[in-house]
Structure formats: structure tokens, C-alpha cells
Length: 113
Image (tube, rainbow, N blue to C red; front, side):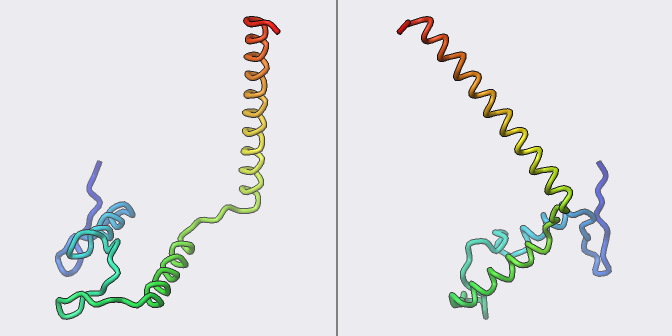
């Protein structure tokens, strides 16, 4: 597999694929934790508390940003997927019902009533 990284103008390697970009974003903070689990901002080298409304607004912005990345199915795809799921669930219900019937007959034969 080839390395798809390119050199940018400032000499740093530029990620060439989406996986490379995700990897770079995940470890982009100085602590290497990806920014997860921190409720503080760093200012002048000291952590500063971030208010609850500020964190809530940031969370909602990130949710909206993630929802914009979603590839929503078309109406035709949605109908197709729904039919596939319903057929599969119907098949599994029939299969389990058949197994239940077979085991019930086997128990009745084995132990009698």
C-alpha cells in the first residue's frame, strides 16, 4: 500500500486520505487525548473553566456539523432497505416459530403428556 501523504508549503506532511486526516485530528492536541473529556480551556498556561451554556452550545454545533456529514438515503433506497429488513425479520420469526414447534414436539414425544 502506498503512502498518500503530501508535503505542504510549510514543510509538514499533508494527509492524503480521509483516514490520514482523521488520524491527525484525533491526536492534534498537545496532550494527545484528542480534546476528549476536558471541560476547561487553556489560557496563559492555566486551565480556565468553561461555562455550562458555552459547552452546551459547542456540543450542539458539533452535532449539527456531524449531521451535515451524514449521507442520507434517497427515498428509493429507504424503501428498499425497509423491505429488506421486513423480509429478513419475517424469515427469522418463521424460523424461530418452526424451531419452537419442532422442539415442542420433541419434548412431547420424549416425556409424553
